[in-house]
Figure (cartoon, rainbow, N blue to C red):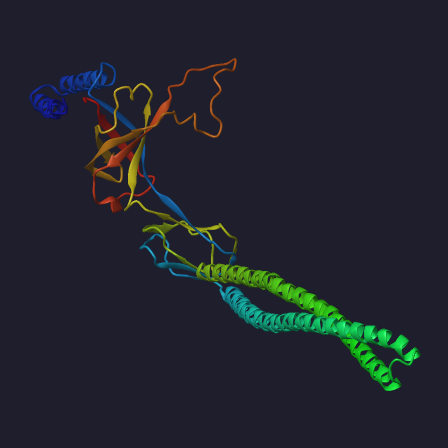
Length: 404
């Protein structure tokens, strides 16, 4: 149908050349009115609106650290490319913060090394004490066992002495009546008495040795128990001290992690004193000057990225979008380029009217109601590859082919 209407103006022009001027003008007017009515009210294969503008992504250049602006590296309304430097913020305070963080990190690293050395030294000392106490324990245990063996030997000797004493006593008791009756000589009795005294002396000596050895055994037993307790204590203390020192090492490691995080944060903040381009486009709308103090998140300028992503936002009446679908072809005319026509296609249709998403949406449940034709935003993708020619806010006229 588009093609049929393209030839219509030529036919009208031919008619005008051939007839009366006023009649020709009237005919032309009637013809155009018919065309307009047929297209606008009797149903057509296209929908048109001039309530449409060019849209692009707008990226605010913001400060991620606070400080005083020391330099700009761009000119207003100029093209900027990604990773180019835009703004410098005074960095002396941030450099000092990095130096302090580096010192704290080094201190935390030194404390970790000291904690490791302390652990090695103390555990080595405890291990040496364990070996020493183990030797004492083994020595006292050996002395205790030796004393018990010697006691058994002394007890055997005491038994022998007791037998000899008993034999000597019995012999003396047997000779004493014989001496009284002068059946034996005094010498025989004296020899027996001497043997008895020797046996008694040996018995007393053996008994004394047994008692002394018992005392020694008690001492060795006490020392052996104490050495065993000391050994167990020092051995268990190794685990306690080891856990304590391991805790100090883990604390030192945590301090290192915290110090490293602070150092990393300080370096990040220092890097953020250099604000780069994060999105290619045209920089505009500069809002600050050199020497201004800016806060975190404060916008410095804006970048419009029409070259990367430009589209048309057309606001059609609700009576026009009934036949619209995603993918339909669109003819775009931009006021800036009146002699050119651009192609596009419907990318999406809003699910709500523009007024619904406004700050103060309409409330139709009130007493007074006036019906107003609503408009729905339609996003139109531009097929032209040279999007750099488009500028945000350009006025356009769009015609959507709704034959499909």
